[in-house]
Length: 140
Image (cartoon, rainbow, N blue to C red; front, top):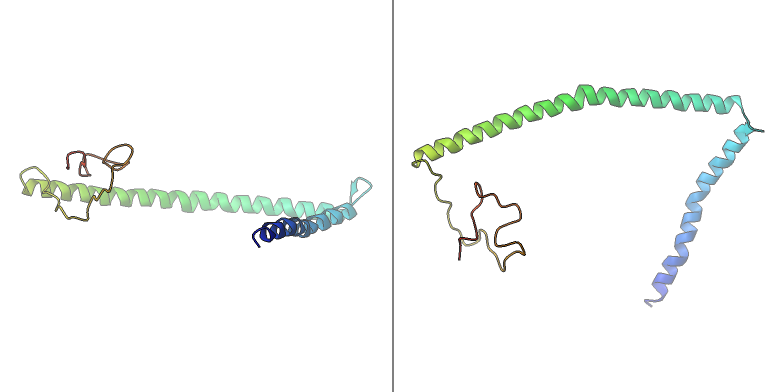
């Protein structure tokens, strides 16, 4: 049974590829009808001009979206994040001031920083930051 499945898949894949390629082949044959003896017909030239006009309009649309939507949205998001981070830093300084210049101890819950075995690079996570994370090298 296991030998039949790969054989079936291998046989059906080229058939599917041939079926999907027919659409492209049909379109290519249609283009040959539009170009007679190396000279493009009026229908072909009109179609080509239509495509170029559509491409120019679409390019201009996305340029406007980039300049008038994406860039201002990025600036607004940057300002918002800066404000939130400033509030967070201010709050952290307030907490330090209340506790004699140091952050209060983080509760030592048994489910935090559980390690079954050390990582290949040590006991800390790959993105360890000594200012924010607990140093697991100091822990037994």
